[in-house]
Length: 133
Image (cartoon, rainbow, N blue to C red):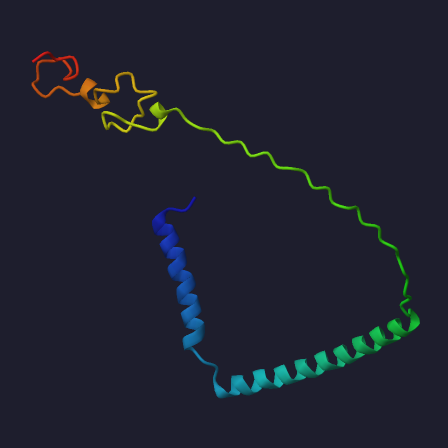
């Protein structure tokens, strides 16, 4: 796996190659030669395309398509009733008496926040929930 610096180096290298190719335009003699070679390639492609079209026309004439009629029988879709199940929750699953974001149905003591069992503000080693002031 490449490290971040290696990825940056590879990315900069690719960016450099791309920009280098764009910034150095061809000289006029290179442009003339490349346009000459492009023209020759285009002529050869046109000849090949014409040959391929002629061959396709001959094949089409040899094998004329025939029309066939096929009877299709479709099944009638059956409609089935959908049963909707509604689940209602007990009131204890919908309210939080002490505000500790733990619903009363699963809260061991719904009147005391659970954080009080783990904090000790007076430093005597007894949690605030069990501390008798």
